[in-house]
Amino acid sequence: MDKIVVEGGVPLRGSVDVSGAKNAALPVIAAALLAEGDHVVRNVPDLADVRTLGKLLGHMGCAVERSAAARAMSLRVPAAVRPEAPYELVKTMRASVLVLGPLVARWGKARVSLPGGCAIGARPIDQHLKGLTALGAEIRLEHGYVEATAPRGRLRGAVFTFDGQTVTGTENVMMAAALADGRSVLRNCAREPEVADLAAALVRMGARIEGAGTDELRIEGVSTLRPLDHTVIPDRIEAGTFLVAGALPGGDVTVAGCVPAHLEALLEKLRAVGAEIAEVRGGLRVVGDGRPRPVDVKTAPHPGFPTDMQAQLMVLLCLAEGSSKITETVFENRFMHVQELQRLGGDIAVDGKIAIVKGVPVLSGAPVMASDLRASAALVLAALAARGTTEIQRVYHLDRGYERIEQKLAPLGARIRREKT
Ligand code: EPZ
Image (cartoon, rainbow, N blue to C red; front, side, top):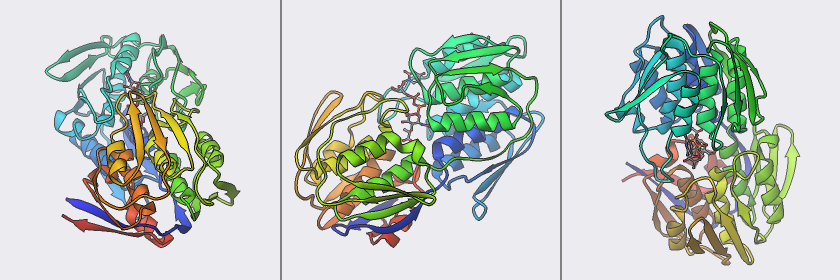
């Protein structure tokens, strides 16, 4: 198992490239199951989660090949697949549930392990199941598995309103509706850029979808789709993490290859804490001038402030001149990083969904433990700002969503390395 060691206190300077988006690549790769043939997904990040999904499609009978050089994944989907996602694979990555919609829509049946709980919350999939049921799927939960069938061999179009906005729920039902018989109208959909990117990929396959990026999707089902060739969008959360790194006191970082329009809520907060932000060719430049100002933040579905940036922004606010209030509204248990930030000298008090962060002049290095993907990114940022040495354990969390982060940060001047424990 690896750990990351950081000698902190060095402001970051220079330019860093953003990889393709994990949360766009995963649903787009799953969408390949909707059509027989040879598919190509481009700008795919080299991440543990992507490899897990590749293994899952391999288990179903697809031929999966990854070209690191081309940053592309090629998939050959056969005429018949094994429509099953076993617990062994799903337990390592909840996003595996994204195969459910495509399987039941394309093959009329699916057996997919229930994802189970997660460090950041209960994360049920009731909305996924309700949406598929509205499209005519018959769903049973048995022995920890979702058993789904399309009684007439094909789903049918329907009007469905999500009780709450769900990213992968919207993606699952949208993929299923693309092959259903008739017209679907999905309301209260998630509006994340990754959802819109999936819709764009489906349209390239021949799907008829209107309203991508809004909370209402109108989908005219088609009987067949053609193989995919799609380039996924840049990772706005990886970009956001590097922007926060550049906004730390004394920082001056250009984040190349990101899409500013995908980051508006974060940029608004970075400007509010006093960071200078400028759009430059092909990206964004951020300059962290002195101690940040305090700011209040409330997470929300897109275009609100992303919950996947909450922990990282908390690090910046740990160094602010004054107190900030962070309200986490999307997940019920997403303050696992607080105790570890307190070990680094952060002054944070949590009460349910609210964290009050009293700024301190400096953080100091210490051994800490990662608990989930974005919490581990926050610990790396805090370690970069802290005086002295920080050792971060359980970095496998980090590798699920950041492609060799230490190799991306070192050219910016970070004194960071990976070690075997
Ligand atoms: C996606 O997860 C992302 N993952 C998450 O990123 C991200 O945090 C989340 O959206 C919110 O932006 C991928 O895209 C692979 P949700 P998802 O369904 O789709 C509740 C990262 O760090 N809910 O939008 O699982 C749920 O419990 C990860 O990269 C139901 O109640 O999130 C949560 O409170 C972490 N019933 C809220 O909705 C459902 O059926 C939003 O969850 C579905 C969700």
